[in-house]
Length: 345
Picture 1 (cartoon, rainbow, N blue to C red):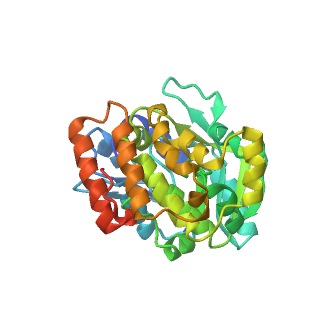
Picture 2 (picture 1 turned 90 degrees about the horizontal axis):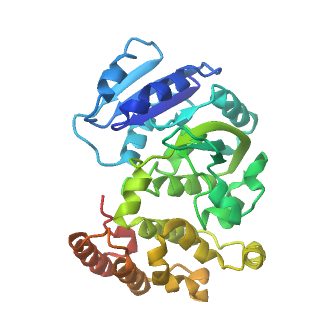
């Protein structure tokens, strides 16, 4: 059996696909299999995938109907995986040839590690790579992602996952398949924040590790899931759901947050707003100012008030039809509860 299963889920990324696959096949660590998935692409993706059909390291699985969820593809790929470790290598990213060698080495050294990840370059559509992807995390700790570390997963959830996703790109992560399965895999009901929820759940199971060497290249372009989801205006609701779940298991590290509040002159819930909410919606998040939110996850009425205010204040790209659907869904959440809010795909 291979040591690592490399899962490459693809949907309409033909222009990036060869570079992605070649950067996986060209790794210095060669004890792996590559599982190529396609979610019923409408571009030239399948033609490109077929070029690798005769490579003994490669298996190909094609959907005849679009699943509508990248996290369904993650679960499918991990289900097919035979390796001890899994690398979900997104089809529009690419990697340094030493990524597997370095991350597998870290995981092999400590059995308690649930996953290991490395630093990522941000690559723009014009080919520029002039900053690291963790730059927006600077408000948490300006130097944390500039050096290697091993960390207790519970503390990591208290300090970082309860605020935002400190793992900015899934393609930078290699994880233990057994832990992924133990936490139930990725939440397929989430459009954007399923990886955040997954990494937090895995962190609760043990320890995590980070390498400051930038071995991953994350491509930023207008057709990413994040870009598309930001245009619908419902990503903040997903973020709130993930945060609620983490708060249900652990309280934030109050002393650390008080120190950071003094450093940034801003309390931590507003940082959630800064990362996840367009400027036009910030006035909708008065909700986050209360001490009550810090103490416990919000109830249904407070969650409903947040959603209604958010939908009402969202910028004009949310048309009236979509706004009406979201008002209806928000009211329905009063009966079903926030965990069952039907996020628009």
